Length: 269
Image (cartoon, one colour):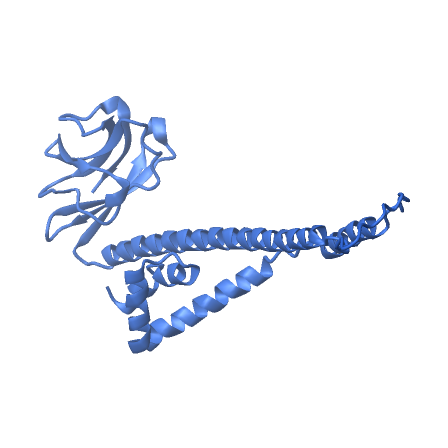
């Protein structure tokens, strides 16, 4: 894995968010010490995440603190202002210890502790909410980047085939039932390998698959089964000779002979 692949792997973002394993974190820290490009990417990602968290910060209600402390003062006032109760004072026996009664303030401390707990819990909830949103944004950006990388990879593959002088392109146009469908066959005249770009065909139903056919000497010859993973990247078959190509929709795994009523596109060389 080269430097760019390592940076785009997502390990830096996982490290910053605390998701990286100890082994991954140790490797990244070691790499940053010896690779200026990785270190710069780490600092940039860190700043991006900090800016994202700041921009989405949710502040607690401005009057929350004042409401809580007003509640404390009300509790204290209720304890201090108690109606006086006049009682007969019993005679004090000789040598009897008179212990002064001190008013307990445990309720005040309990309320204060509750206030601190509420403030801490509220802060944690706001922080967790911000962290969750930040993680969602990061996952979304990573997915978008991955899709862009795949699209660019496919585009580069097509450009490489188009610029290859040994590559013959055959346009397949939709038949009467499927006039909006089209596909492109890339046939390497040197290696005889056949590639297929069929992204403009409808998505195959469950249990069905598109099959490419080469028409040689008036007879159809299977030129391989199409999958999205193979599109423009993997050769479906080697065809030494052909006058035309066609695509039919067959059951998963293909057919020995084409189902003519399920033909979608066809094109002559």
